[in-house]
Structure formats: C-alpha cells, structure tokens
Length: 312
Image (cartoon, rainbow, N blue to C red):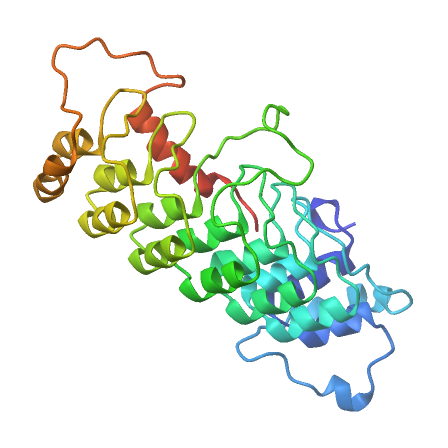
C-alpha cells in the first residue's frame, strides 16, 4: 500500500488526473491497450508528468489489471473530480468514456461539476452536463453548484448552469421536505454569494433570471440588501431595490439595511437607503437574543462558510 493506505496505482491515477496527464491515465486505465503511436501522444498543454513511478514498478503492477476509474483518495475525491477541478477537458472526456461516475461525491458532498464551477471551467462544466451531471447538486453545507460558481464570479459558468435548469434560489433536494432534519449549515443563495464577493455582473444576471431579492437567511434574518449594506456595496443595493428588495425588512436584531449602513458608516449607502426606508431606527431598545451567537458575526460566517467546504 502507498501513503495514506492507497495502492500505488491509485495514487498514480489521481496524480495524473490532477496534473492533466492523459497519457499516464490511459496507461493505467487501459493497460496494454495503447499502440506505439498512442504512446507517443503528448499530455495536455501545461500538464506535468505524473512522475517517474508512472513508468516504474507501480505502473507495471497495474499492467495486468486496470485501475478502477472511480477509485478515490481518503477524502473521497475521484479521478474525474481532480480532472474537472483542473479544467483538463481532454482528460475529463476520456474518463467519462471509460465510465467514470459523473455524479460521484467526495466526503464533503462536492461533485465533479461543483469542482468545474468552482474554478470557472466552462467547457468542462458543459461536458459534464452533457453526460448527465446534476445541475442542482448541493454539498454537505447546502451550497449548490450555482452558488459555488456565483461566489467565484464565473459569469460564463453561471449562465451555463441557469440555461441548463439550475434553480436560481434555494430548493430542497428531491424527496426531502422541510423539517426532515437535514443539516442546513449554509443558508446562502447564489445571489448572496455573488453580493458578498462584489460580482455585480453575476448579481445582475441572477436577478434577470428571477433571483429573490428578499430571501432572508433563516438563522439571522439577513437579506441580500442587508448584506449589501453590511459590505458597503452601493451599486448592488441599487440593483436590488430596482428589482423589488424591501428596505423595511428587519433582521433578528430588528435592524433595517439602512441602519446597518449607518452602523458601518457607509454614508453614501445610508443616504441612498434613508428616503426608501419607512422603519426608523429605535433607540434604547432591548435587543432580542439571536438564535446562534451574534447575528452580525453569524451572517458573515454563514457566507464565509463556503470556505469551510474542502474539496480537493
């Protein structure tokens, strides 16, 4: 066994797919099948060889039997997920032809399509969708493929996913109902993820596709407009209001987006929201206890929890 308990041939395949080395992957998955002309094929541009072991004892041990195409590392990452994350289209195509499971997940719930969306690989995402990838898959934190793409500001991938049928707002996976006990650690929509990271073009596209400007995170009551106020994003706040965002929505601390902008000292944003807001700030009030810690911190943590979903 190799390091981490993985057979050496498994390690070679996963490393080859991470580095875009189609030649080594083919030799491991189709031992003895490559003709001399094929063996002369070059790896994808920019790809590194999988290492000297690719032609050494580890590869020789695999010559009698092909490595399983869906073998995975200790975190559950498969060869297809590594290739998709790296944007290695030729290798992804080869793995799919060899029967790789397009919807396999790692231990954190990430699929190959999520990996491609995360890094903005449009052509790879298109290929995976053509082979039946679940466009509405969610990881264990509840983040969807669309949310992952929106967080990275990958406009081309976001458009592709929407055209392929991605739900623009949150949904329950098939067969699950509210109250099923499913962990919902992340209640951040694609729109909120794009707002947090300042991707105004993605925000505009999502709202054109009907994203809800009044979705409120269930734990803290923060809406997209409040998130814009928290981060001082005037342009985004204007887009949201034009699409029907409610300036009078209250968080669990009974604050409006206007009051959040005041607290954060974003004067231009506060001046914009002031005449639109009917609910005025209260003074000397006893604030209710938030459900989990401080809502201001919780709201930021909820959006940032995308960072807590390791994949590769």
